[in-house]
Image 1 (tube, rainbow, N blue to C red):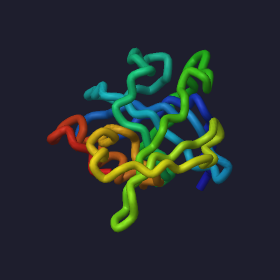
Image 2 (cartoon, rainbow, N blue to C red; image 1 turned 90 degrees about the vertical axis):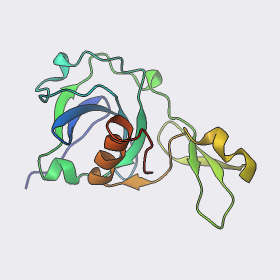
Image 3 (tube, rainbow, N blue to C red; image 1 turned 60 degrees about the horizontal axis):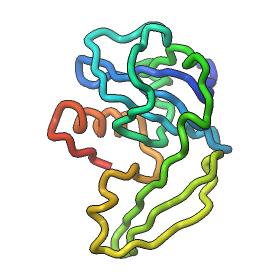
Length: 159
């Protein structure tokens, strides 16, 4: 199998049931783990080229680090590079993390996805941060499920 080479600025497409959604790789960390910004526009047919994609790349509905299985099984596709991609146009967000019995925290990363700080938050403030992206790596199947929940089901991401 050919080695999968992803790069920052790659526009990707992935299946959600019988439709397709677009993502953008905005960072790749030192361990080659991509950070994806995913968008809410569903299409009946998959795009074949990044130039065809006409969405507002500044309005992701979901942000997550993800694995490679979707590319390995060829269900996820790289469409090409976003013209004029600049990291500065896609800042690394502040992430939320909460694993019981520990206190919830906000997690800050630098521009290369190195964790630089954790800030504890009060249990009573959790709802304030519910829309923040969650830390951690998800498999491609988990990303598809989370996007399906956001776009098709009840609008609540699973993770």
